[in-house]
Length: 501
Image 1 (tube, rainbow, N blue to C red):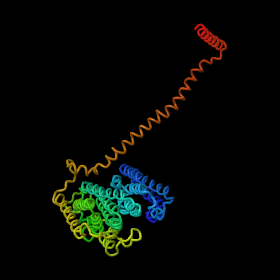
Image 2 (cartoon, one colour):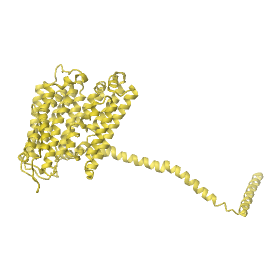
Image 3 (cartoon, rainbow, N blue to C red):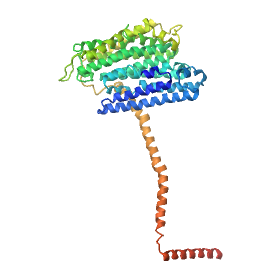
């Protein structure tokens, strides 16, 4: 990660990029004897290779057009490139970012990555590696500023991913999978921000930093719950843990409040800034993007409140032999530190020491909308109301009812789709995997029956004919004399026939 962030060229970034990808693969497959872990690691590796091809092609294009891959050389010479070339570079960089950050259409690997150890999920699959795509786009700001089409695609990808992650998070019962889909959705907010241009770059990076605090804390909290519950991850088997694991409950609760954007906690400052920037885009697209961001905030409040209710409140639904207990200090102290960041990091980065001012040498001075489409106070109140409605809805449907320990099999079509992650794996299988297998089999058949068939056929034909001709070589003089006599008779007969004609 240090090489990725501190490198002074796109090639140095790429080396770090591949390094964290390798680390991700190896850590997902840490328990390599588990088929699910091995499969998840392979899935992550393959889907990331798709994105990495885009990043590599973008670097190749930079070098062929500008003769350099250094940040100063590339970003300072964007104006020398044709518009189509800049757009192509931007889209290829976006493909790389989507793969690493689990964004649509390469989002399916990230929830499966939860097969790795929980501290790994907290570190690289929530707070650092998976946000590298956001860093890449923000670091390449001049390229995207010069390519409006690529910038628009970034915004659309972010908006779509916000909804995919939020909808999927509403239906899962595995505590780590819910947090993983939340990560997908929150990175969607970051993509939305950096896709808005100068007004959103600092907001996206600020949300990246605050998200690192509260999401890492939430994952470590989930690990603490698993520790106390015998490695159980099914929230339907939890309940009533608030009194059994008080430190975990408090720290996890602060991370939950920061994530849903509770007023004056970290997520409130950074997520609201992104939503305001979306509305300030102006026109129909601005209201549409802002509306999607607000709806995503409401869904986030719903699934996270559902998680809190299923895990820490209600009647205990533990299996026999499970004895919930608080984790040791070596586990709870990092959660306390991250909980402090969950509370204060947003205020520090937005109000006390604005990150936008610190990043001014990179992105320029912070832009202020001349006339905001919607006043910031109105946006803040609107988001808070929607978040409250989402939390209330979760309480009505989960908190007031008896929670079955087994998920209902008969559910509505939207719930079934959400449980299947909106069928992302099936779409990838139908659109990419199966056609790829058919193409591979067709090429194998052509190679086997066509190319090899011709070569082997010629060899077989020559071998067979020479074998048959070899039988005429008997070694007897009388046989050869008879052959010569027969040939002479045929030649003489042919000559007589021609002469008579």
